[in-house]
Image 1 (cartoon, helix red, strand yellow):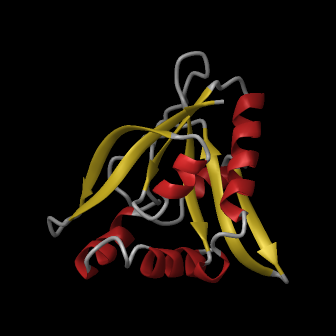
Image 2 (image 1 turned 135 degrees about the vertical axis):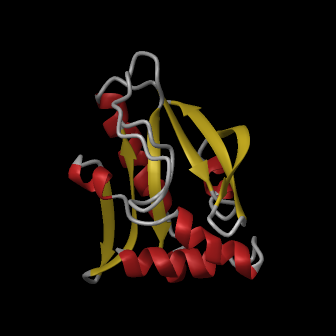
Length: 161
């Protein structure tokens, strides 16, 4: 999965960010083993190769990998909080084939089954078109500043499920 994530970050964000912005994304994004341990992460394969992955979370962290600062493992309350859609990546050679939608369908169904009525995510500029087409609406633009001071633009988006 790490190889897929790194390829997706390096290639899919290039049209949206300058080289230092793409490089900064590696400090902000990546694998989140908490979602995997919570059994809320999905993997799409084709011919035994991982071509997409993503999941949802019942925890407070909105975005980021294991190494990202500011993580919060507190459990969310489905009666008042939004579930989180997290760590969505598609192999650049497989974009626009429905993989993201398939994962979003699975995330929403699982979150709904646990009583959540809303989901939120932090979209990259490359991911925004998929999420908008899927019904997510902008809540607010946010940024994540890395240790070198470079800011990574993100969009906090939400949807009722």
